[in-house]
Image (cartoon, helix red, strand yellow):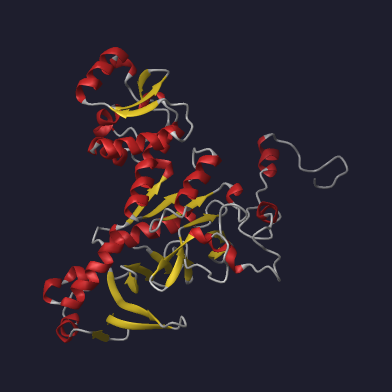
Length: 435
């Protein structure tokens, strides 16, 4: 499970920024929204809301980058465009098998080398006091190498810095490094990162093909979304052949004008996706041709949500509310917050201000804001606002506070100036003063 992610000089984040899912145990509100992670508790879901171009998508991209780095998938770490520093820093605190760990890396984009790695286990006593026990340290900046394994310490000097140590060496020769690799890859493999602007249907297709039980779960998810469907199916080859003949080849072509469906209607898997059908009033129609973009996105999302809840995965979604009715978005979040969910976590960027809801949906520390000014980009939690000084309580009308700018992360558009220019209208009123 994810506990926290720290970022420094990566993409839009030019200063050290922390995104934390650790629960504030002084609050007893919505106890079902939290779950133990070792000796601490974390929230099951969190949203990030803020203006366009303020860092929400960059946060999602960093989660994807972290996953790819840990799984040895080719990736390019990018420093902040306006920074004079070339070193990107990432640090993740996570829990595997109820033990808490911290892994930190620093990557020099000028030399394409990992100049720093540190893996440690976090120990907490019965009073909550925290202590880190370092398992591995490879510090090329300060020229320090430490490990629980003496032979591994000696090898650090010789290992290439073009890759993480666990991917540069044969870990079977070093028990400590082998354990570190197992823990990090287990954690990274539990992360799914998706973009609702371009969500693929492949996972849903594969789950529908897998077995009747998974097929039924996907179908129930789509039907329970109140989309007026009688059923949602995956046809076998014979059933599809009949549908193809009845529906007509000319009617089985994707609408290329739906620009948000590039991934959904990708040519190499398009035929497979035609096997997904929706049933309306007893009539079967190809979902990818007939259904709305929102319905198809919900069907694509269903497999990720169900897999996360069943397997205890971490689901990171950019623009969760894209093309979805606000009640559907709330229902999806509520699935993760529900007491029946014991391991899965949801992190989502959103624009829907109705989700600023501590009365019925979230604890304060589950709501995050992204903000950017002329100097820096910021991430901060509603949990940082107090009841006494800021007047932010669980019963506060957060939407009104946000609209008034009292929570920050609010854009200030002035598009009327563009309207004046577009209409060739003078900005000076009849009184001679600017409007």
